[in-house]
Image: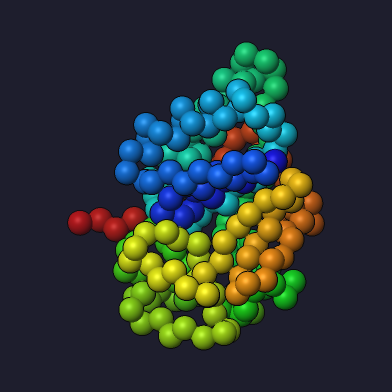
Length: 200
């Protein structure tokens, strides 16, 4: 299984052996060649895709690249790599209800200063400024790597071992059994922007 997070500021590729973070600047030129080379050298049975909300460029380029790869594979071989796509909102809600994440989360939506404050118990969210966040043990922050984003004990991260995805939060590791999410396996996916673009 290959884990792809196209919802953060950096595109994150992860499997048992390798981990890569691709910055959004120039992602149109770097992600396609890296993914193509990766699939040539690594057998990929399934792609688990964390798909929105996040930066529009990463979501657009990420889904377009995956769809193009599968179109080419189907044309050349008659097969494709199944994609299990889920939004951060649904994954974090699942993790909260399994007791692996606290009730509240600060979610990156692709803007430097604005975030969503999400209540995963009530399934609600509101947009606030990152400067307004009051950190507590009942709150986690999304996995983001830009310097403006506070990297502290509240931030989650991901790893993989024995083809199993793990979520890490406050020095605890939690297995995320993908099969329990009952996601359809797709050939093509659409970006889950979940917010309207800012027009100047």
